[in-house]
Each structure stands twice: as C-alpha cells, then as structure tokens.
Amino acid sequence: MKSLILKLVVPLTIITFSMFTKWWYVLPVDAPDTMMSGFPLIWISQGWHTSMSLQIFLKELLINLFIYFSVILIITYLIHKYVVQIQIPKLVTLVLTILTGIICTGAILIGTMPEHVYKSKRDFEIEVLTTGYKFIWQTQERPKYEDYKK
Image 1 (tube, helix red, strand yellow):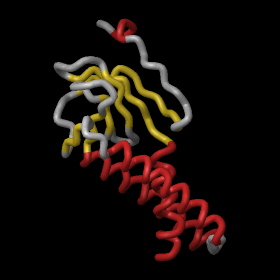
Image 2 (cartoon, one colour; image 1 turned 90 degrees about the horizontal axis):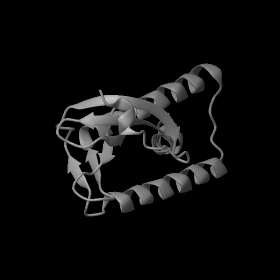
Image 3 (spheres, helix red, strand yellow; image 1 turned 90 degrees about the vertical axis):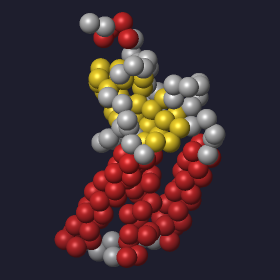
C-alpha cells in the first residue's frame, strides 16, 4: 500500500486539486467584490493591494489538500482491497510523475511571485453572493455586482 500512496495517491491528489475547484463570488467586509476559489474551503483570493496579486490562506489550503488526499486514499484502498489488486504500469507512473512535476513547478513559480500575500487563515468575513464549480481549462466570467445589490 505504501507504493500505491507514492505512485498513485499523491500524484492523483495534486492533479485533482489543481484541475477541479469551486469559485466563489463574494462580498468581503470593507473590501470590493471579489472572486475566490477553493473546494471545499476557500483558500485563494484576488489580492486587493495590486493587480495580478493573490491572497493565499495556508490553513484552508492544507485542510483542502488533506481532504483531497484522504478521499483519494480511501477510494484507492477500497478498490485495491475489495475490487481488484491495483498494479500500476511503469508508463502510468511516469506520466503521473511528469504531470505532477509540471503542476508543482507551475505552482512554485506562481507562488514565489513577490506581490502575493500569504496569511495563516482568512481573517475577514464574507457574504457569498454566488458559487459554481469549474475545471482549470474552463473560464468563469465575473458576475455583475449590480445583479446582487440589495
């Protein structure tokens, strides 16, 4: 099972985490309307101090990663134990490793940009106006704030 975790569960966790997310259109207290992302918890938001910056909430990010890892581990374990013994071909391992490496390299490059703000957790209240799910290759149009004014 240790081999499955390293060869299958960890890469699938990183790939799934980066490919599928939930977007949140929110109205933070004392801030402009903002697009945020993360599933099941919001862990990334647009930065307010400069354009093209991000706010990254580390506690929520780690919780989300743990949830993704746990779900994939449980599914893999149940399939391996009760359905079929999982044997991973070397080609699949190689493809998963390369794809995971590309994703991690991109995340590191984006994460090391100096304009991003890292916080231990989100320290402001929000009012969720609307949400939705998307894959990384889908574009999400920013909703119009006028549609949500009270």
